[in-house]
Length: 477
Length: 135
Image (cartoon, rainbow over the protein chains, first blue to last red):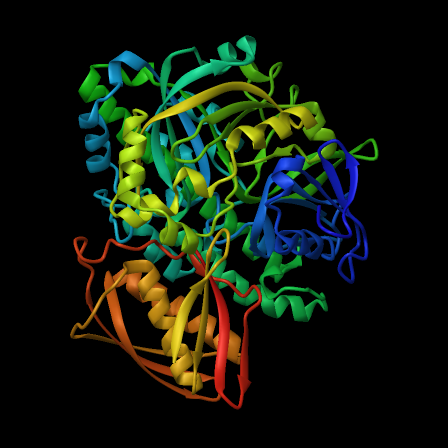
């Protein structure tokens, strides 16, 4: 382990106050010894930097997929007091509400194994990659609907069913959205991209439920062994990117105006209750809603393809759940025995609310929130369940994915996209992408092993393993 | 005068160096286009942009953010930029062509220009900078 870091549990480590000047609280992160081998000093520096921000509560936290990002580390979680704390785009990132959802189907492994035509049809139907435009004609009015009502707008416009909304974090939209704080430039970028996947680590993947760890939770979530599911990973596209860019500028001025000292310009912030903080919060929430609407539209396209090719009904493909990975939200958490509203930032982390949480639908309230953890291209993805331990220890949060270990530069230098696709095909996994680089960039070897990351969160208790899914076919940008 | 991608786990980190500030901006601009669209050349479409900022680093981040915006909303791929910097004002003439999915799909979208660790250094040999693109 890196110098200056103290072990405080089997998988738990502390970054003491004083690791960087000005820390108000200690940093805490969760990591196994084997994952610790790839821990970067830059990520710990960023975890410590977050601890210097005003009004931070308990600890600056990081999940076992922690790695070096900008502002917060990836895998970072921090909650701030509403009265004395700040909100920062550095704790959310450019891709606001980049998130993931899992759609179930009535299909089985034998129905789709080796069906390249299905992957081709999905690749044709869901716009992916750099420069991809949506076939939808999104009007200004529809864009407003996306920003204000998120997935609820999409369902109202015919892109889903009411049940989908019960299976989204926050019901698929943040009520605090205020589109007045979304610039005309951001709106201009949002209009042509509704229903597009994007590029980089975004993907749509067909998976088979390979292993069930918790039969009761799996049944409640709607998962059965051998069942085919579809995982969709994308965010708020250019609209969210522009909102982050615009508000970083405003918050840079605010940081000076409110005399806040920050160790990294990307941590520009303002008091949660200040006009600048509220403006960012409103625009960020509008972007989060756009992302939920976007994932809902892609879900609709996927259901149409599956419906056409397999003759299955729309209602036979219920949504398992949809979670945000990059977001700041006002949530209620218990601090020193008292329930308080706090501003939680999750940057590459997933909400993992335990049983009894108010945001859960009635049929899941005794189980806990489904948590969707994507693996990398050739490796397993997992469904987990939120826990009371997460409520007590991490503001109801857990990991969000495998976490990178190899840079994109190295990946492109060392790995050959065509060879990787051929190797995956030998394992029965079909890959479609616009370029070989896109495959090399996201190859299985560039990520931490997903099974090790979820093992750690399961053993720490901040979420519980429910099921493992293996990839069968993937489309990438 | 050059730029190179240096290892960064999650994103793309570019190290650029050049004899003048204008040339440094031009290098980071070329890096941005290469990351997004892969190799590209020529074109006859011209767009002019003007930026005013509070310091040299913000001027660079704002310039590249504006390039991202124009490139995306107008579906343009730029290959060259003629840049003039006067204090904290920048004028740039961008030269490029329309996005062609066949020739320009070799890259990855850049989501934003990060301020993390952004510092333009100046010594007797010229200017240099490390800049992170979120991808």
